[in-house]
Image (tube, rainbow, N blue to C red):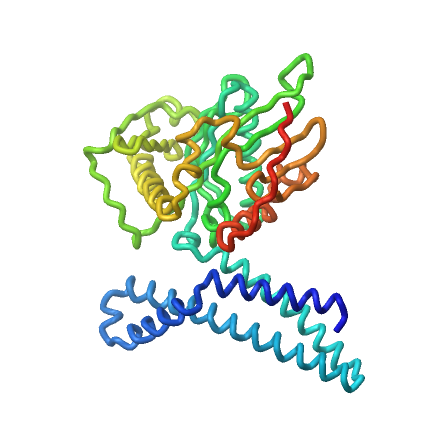
Length: 377
C-alpha cells in the first residue's frame, strides 16, 4: 500500500475513533432503543412539540450511529480490495479502492463537522454582542472592526443579520452593539467566539504613528425558542428606558424607545433599540434576557462559565482568546488552539471558519491547544 494511502487510512481510523468517543456509542445505542420504543406509543402525538423533538433526536442519533458503521465497513472493504489487487497485480482494482478511500476521508470530515455542531442549542439563531475595552477611540474603532468582521462572516454563510442595539463612540467606532444572526447552526458555529480579542497596529488616530494595543470583547448567546422554558421573576428585573443612541431617524432618537433590562440576581443586562416603539423593544429585550440566562446555564453545565462570560472579566491582558497583529508583522493567532494565518485582511473580512472549526474540535474531542502568541508591546 502506498505511503499516501496508508496516511489516509490512518487519518480515517483516528477520525472514527474521535467520532465514537464523542458520540459515546454504547450510551447512544441504548438511547436510540429507548426512543424507538417511545415512537411506537400511539399517544405520542398528543403533544406535537414533544413528539417532534423526540423524532428529531431519534433521526439524528440513528444517522450518527449508522454513519459510523458505514464508514468502518467501507474502510475495511477498501483495504481488503487494495490488498487483493496488489496480490493479483491488478492496478485497476487498487486505483478504484484508493479513490474510494479518498472519498471516504471527505465523508468522515463532513461527519466530524456535524459532530462539532450537535450541542443542545447549536441549531438556534444567535445574538452577538461587541463591547469596546478601555482605551477610548482606539478600542471603539476596534469594536466596530470586529462587528463588521462577524457581519461579513454571516453574510458569506447566507445568514440574516438584524441590528438590535448600537452605542456610537464619541469620535469613531462603537462603544457597544448587539446583532441577531439567523441561520442553521448559527449559535453552534459562533459559540466559541466569545471572549476578548486583541489588536496590535499602527494607530490611524495617533499623529506620531505609534503602535497601539486595543481590546474588545465579544459575547455570544442563543436565540431560544418556545421549547426552552426560562422562568424569570419580574421583581428580579429592573427596567430602564432611554433615547436610542444609534442611527434610526428622528423618531427613534427623540423618543425614549430604547429599553434596558437588568437581571438583578446575576447582573446580566440587555439593551434593545431596534424597533420604533418601546413596546416592541421591551418584548425583544425580554427575549434577549431569557436567552442570556439560558446561555449562562449552558456554560455552567460545561463548567466554563468563568472563562466564557467575558463581560464579567476585565477586558484586557490575560483574558484574550485571539490576537490580531497588523504591525510589525501580519498575523492572526488563536490563543486556545494555536491556529494562525498571515492573511489578516481575509480574517477581518470574515474568513473565520478555520478558527471556529479548530476551537469546536478542541471542545468536542479534546485536541491539544497550541502555544500562545508572543506578546507584542
